[in-house]
Image 1 (tube, helix red, strand yellow):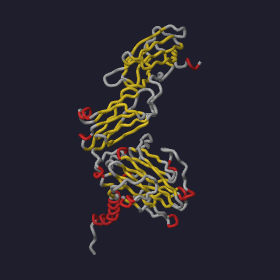
Image 2 (cartoon, helix red, strand yellow):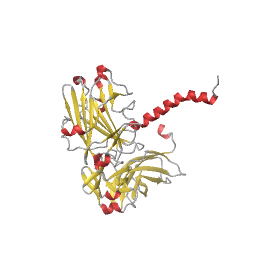
Image 3 (cartoon, rainbow, N blue to C red):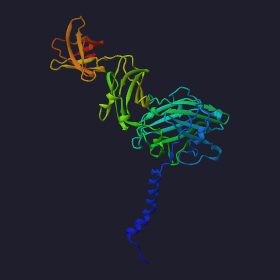
Image 4 (tube, rainbow, N blue to C red):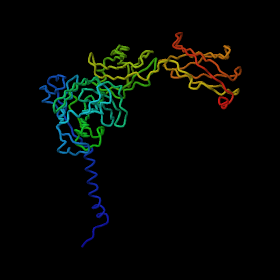
Length: 440
């Protein structure tokens, strides 16, 4: 009998392993694909999912458990998800068979509350290249409560300040509940204006601890974007452009700017608006946008009183809102001028003490702010004064102590832009000879 060579024997041993690897690689890349159906007429948003237009919708009916297995026969229920779109909206309709209607978890009623903890339908849509990974998560419970948030990737934190503008209605029957959702296309973070997009529909049944997915590739969770189903036919929506790299920067009072790149036909971006608290703050016409090359930059100003308001950036083609981006100005401080980061300083005759003072305002392009200060001792005598300039965010004061002594002082500060006073603040200041003095 002829013996096989060592290399041939090695190949025979490796062949089953390589077959498994190849099969796994094929499965990871062979996510299912669907064509987005166009609505002949817009469905009535009432939660019933019974309009005639749903008959021609893109439909998903095979829902399996996480891991890919079919539910046990005793726990098997029907779930039917449908997608439609027109030039303004993306529509989702879902019918959920539920024999345990009275045992459903429906604890949340407010928008953007923790709806995902209830019985829910979840819809994830990623209108950008898969390797970019930005997507929107929608969670809807039987009460019609909606959580919508944007994610920059599967491990990213849900951005609840995002507002898609989606509207939802739900209906609960004897053995079924259903939802309808209408999402403005402008409210989705579209980068791939001609597609493809990627999506996933999922369902949680809390009464039986069952988690169902529309994906045919086995997954262990709802956010495995690498196997989201492909959605084609996007070009039929007639979107003129998309947006990539949208960035609001670090928002502060004073001059700010959002920036982004246009994907698609940039000449069709003919206008932009910035709204704060529902009021128009800035408008950009076609000539103002046409002179910019590369990254588009839209400057705007925030003022005291803007905190906790909604900021919305609208990008237009004519009167049509093609893209909108939103944020809640929840991180803005109440005061423009903060207190020094430390109230006690070591008094040294050889060196100055440097104070960093938070300045919660930006000067804007080509401008600067002035911080004037004056320090008085416990008797009220002025022992030091000065002025420094800053572009914003913070100011540094260098205090020299030849005439100063250990003790307590009052530091008065005034923030100015040109001749205009923006803010003033007075804070206590203590000087000590050594680090142990305060411990006596």
